[in-house]
Image (cartoon, rainbow, N blue to C red; front, side, top):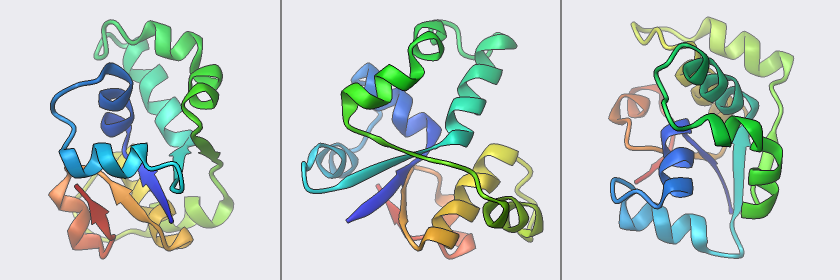
Length: 128
């Protein structure tokens, strides 16, 4: 099985944060599962570190690629299809990073591991 991590889920996993649900922790830790990390998450983390919204995440940005490898996570590139889907999504949700994750989950027909209930309105299977 494959699933895509939301950016906050990735950060909570890396930090061992208690905000991460038991179900999410178990799913991510299962060796037979393929955990995908969108290029949009790297973009989001780097952007938020730069503007001061993620203090303490500089180390994640500095070693992002190595960090994903160490965790056994698989990078998911942004394709033209993903970009067109994200730009065409209906509704009021304006966060470009979330819209990309939604589009990727739809296009790849995979679940999204996130606490964001708003994703449900886009027909995305969500694990939490």
